[in-house]
Amino acid sequence: MPTYLNEQPNPVVWGGVVWGPGESRALSYFVPDEMLGLTVASQDPTPSPLVLFSDEITLGASEEETIEVPYSHSQRFELTVFAISGAASLSLDDGGQSLTIDAKAFYRGRLEWRSCRRIVLSSAEGAVIRVSIEAVS
Image (cartoon, rainbow, N blue to C red; front, side, top):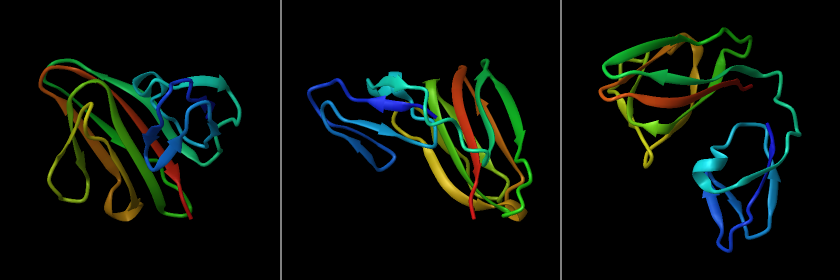
């Protein structure tokens, strides 16, 4: 994914990564640059071949979408889900409670493929949700 630059006078923090004023960072995963006020300084590094799924999901009002988690030989993956706009519910195929995804709450976690083979997104009023699934060892 791209190299992100903080052109703001204050630090920016997201997902445990800190950009000081004027600082740039090259990351191997997507960052919501516009939402954070970061500038894409470069399209390098290119995405890792370990990216199993990466897309923006548009949900209309009262819509639901199921995403099948692609199989990886490692059988483990990191799931990152955040809202670009609106709010949605995220349900994992692990039997747990659904999680709210909105401007204030995102999800990032490492999961086992055997216990979570799909995720379900739903929205009462409509949303645009970014989903990234990366294989991990």
